[in-house]
Image (tube, rainbow, N blue to C red; front, side, top):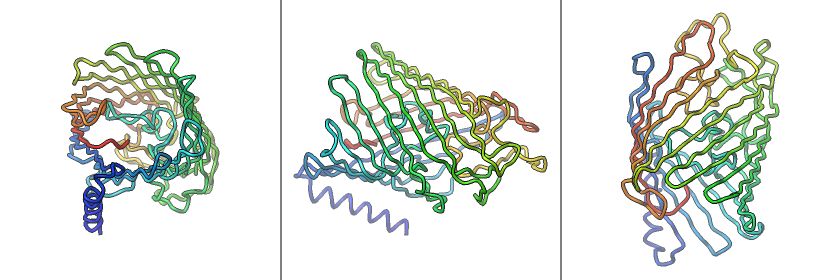
Length: 390
């Protein structure tokens, strides 16, 4: 089935290229990430693997000056080395009729919260809100995007599925509670951007230790805020983001009762352009999933004896190879460089080499557990073509 789907996709792209190159309205683009990833803790290798993290094939079509759209398929090898897989990454239509100086976008698209929607992966780690699980990189919904030219500002308002594009893991609970996001950004002076984002929706509260995903709690409210600023001067720039997250979890005292906790954190991301092709990057993230407590947001019962494995249900973000870090306050340090071998289009790399060292360091204790720093060494080659927005 997968082989047939891939052949169909290749034929579709090839036929599009041959049928309409003269019209100038169809765009074909691709984006691929080939990665070698090593995780080490306490002088022991936890993972060492080659993967294709992303293999985007995208089609864009412009009907006229008021209607265009994009579809993207991701063909990738999974992080747990379970083989190749497919997923729909984009499927949206832009309508320029209804929003002055803007557009309405309907379908599967990026999430407009914090720095998620314009994150360019200049560090391999995801943007802060995506990395710690506040929002997924993409979601289903309807978004309104506009600009205020006189103020040098842009705004978005979106009604989204609220569970991310991979909510099919648990279709019983998908699509019942759409979320609302709003964001505003403006440029007060040259090379400076300031922004604010807001999120409000409901989250299904899962029992931490239940691998069957059953819960007696149901939906509870969650709210998030993001404040960001980007400053630049010549070859140097720095991005900062503060994140606040009020969200429900099962109570530590009674797992069948919900309790809201407050997660807080921030990221500082400086970048230095050494040459036209070479950037040096660094990053520091701090995330505390429950700022009012020194305990993990969940810990095993007294009968839980494993010291090396904790449940890793589907809602634990992909940036956490070891789910235990997700439950405690932790720091993440990143240092590396990006070397742009050749351009794709103006301002966009065509072939890029990325090298990152990353350390995830717990700042809280887990009873009966030893959680040493986890060092990751990541070597990635990215290449792409075409002008679509991935």
